[in-house]
Image (tube, rainbow, N blue to C red; front, side, top):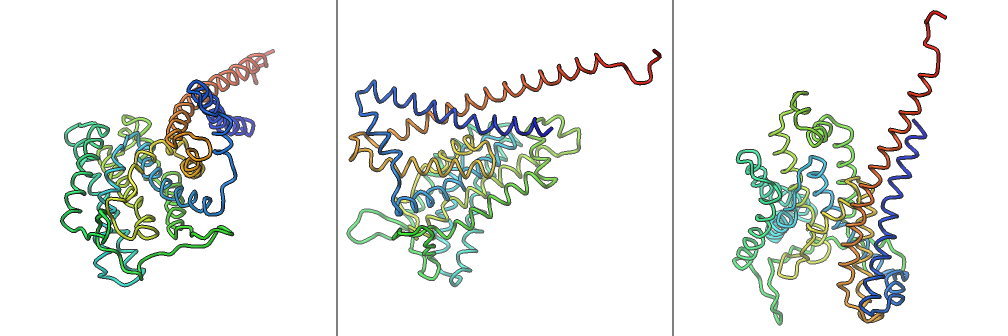
Length: 370
């Protein structure tokens, strides 16, 4: 059993490493074919980040981690919640409007706003959950459509409550009070900027994700339903209720995605609020294999690539959008690598069973007459 565990660990580690190597090779070939300086690109991408950049990498990873965890909850249930992008937009807007009213003082305003955002994200996700359970509509189609609707609804409502910034075309909600703004922590020596205080929230969410899905009856039912609905029904699981619960939980977690930006950076929701976080979470969840620790490393890698891309145009004369190509290749390579590892693991397991059967047949049966 120990040998089997070691083998699986090595295979699990080997898959992402192989995927990264493939991504580097393929990206280098693309750069070479286009006549871009391959060496300068990789020197820029692999250069040591400055303290300020390290802080930006950590802050970006915090937001991406929350997004990926929200996606991973659905994935573990075999639900493809593509709507995290819309869910976090609705939740961030609702949270910003609520926090800006300053009905509660200081940290209490922060805590209540987090609850409001989770409720808003869960309610928006419940639309797709209802359509799937009651009408049989694929959650992939409904959540993609709801993303577009969410973008339009939030823009329309933003115009209703917008506060315009003097000397700028940007508009946004009312700024949250200073007592509720989280200045962050100085965790990186030499950095002038701070790590988001919501790092603590990401750690708590990651722990609860691991504990609930891996150590509780609810988590077992969720994973069992994702593996086989018929087997889950046979064991007494209410599949429709589980689908509703999982999708709403995924949406509630999506509601947390915008909180680090709201309280640690922007302090309001406006036209400059970061977009595309939900779609990035899909790739990071896949890269991290829906594992709490794996997702953390994947989020750091994704954020590292995003941060290092800022110097590509200046140092290497290459558009920073090259990072999107690298990330896409990594994603494809990871999917292929994991599938290859899965098949290799099955073959190794079959070979082991065959050897054990052959060894058993060669032994005398206990109790048999000589």
